[in-house]
Image (cartoon, rainbow, N blue to C red; front, side, top):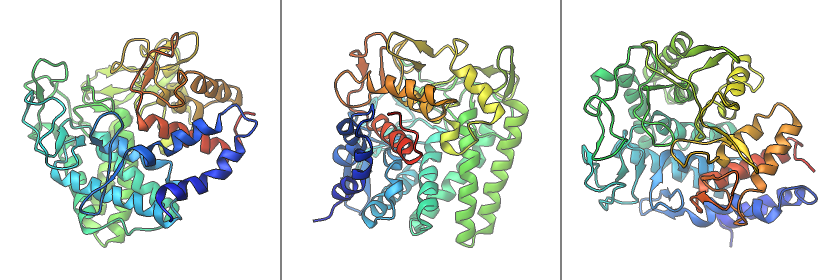
Length: 425
């Protein structure tokens, strides 16, 4: 009997065959590639697909999108296409439940990330109500990749289009956050936003305000540049969907948002670095302040080419990359077994496989790509899986043994190396 698992294993065989004689263990690669399918998918009663992130029993809009992204290459198969469309429909339904939430329960069971600590209290189907701009962009990024592969717009159901309008309206509102009713307080936590939960003051830039980063940590300054770059890109895709549906007004809204974001980034988000030259700031407030750093979670400044935001040879990107992969970035760490980007979300000094994958796929030479791949395959502590983060001096010390996002990005990266004939022998 054919199933999603059977189809993926069949389509994966040429890839595992290509790994014979290479430095990548074929079984480890297969395990990472199949992790999402084999361990995180639950069909829902309404015909959707609920995708947990791994060892947390909730679905993130971001993680779930990334967890199926590497399957898009096989979306010419009906089983794979069906899984992606079912996820997109579930994401749309959840966005309509609460567009400010970043993660959800499979049903309205009242389970929350921090029970009785958040104000306002999340709804019963919301796991956590952290508003993260990238969280709304990821489902559009997945849909865009699916459409590029298949030319199929059947995912754009009535529910999906209502959710898409909700995303556009929210982004438009949050270009002027002072008009928004969103706020977030968490008792006894550094996650609480300043100014009574409304966030620190910002100026108008044309960019979209966000409360939190892809790490689920609060923004220091509330215009995250990396998320706005992604928002600019996916608004272009959203405009195409609206045009295909005959909605010129919303297509124009999307293009206006993308234009405003672009102008805001050019005016407020570029900084002259004394060593690297002109680079992207990580965050800005539109009032002259900037945060210069990068975080391992995606989107990140390091990973911009992986989202089609720019080419890896773009001068501004290369300058920014040189900054990110240097001690000037306070979250760049080096150890005996690896060198890469970490996050304030995990212990100091820990490196994230997500960031190593981003480094490998944007490498400036085959030698850099090979070195980074060797870091990835030598630091999983014998588990055969990627982790959230690890100690580069003692890889057996890591966070999150079951983290399907990292497994998926590693598998996607290896597939791309094979497809582009760039896999080290």
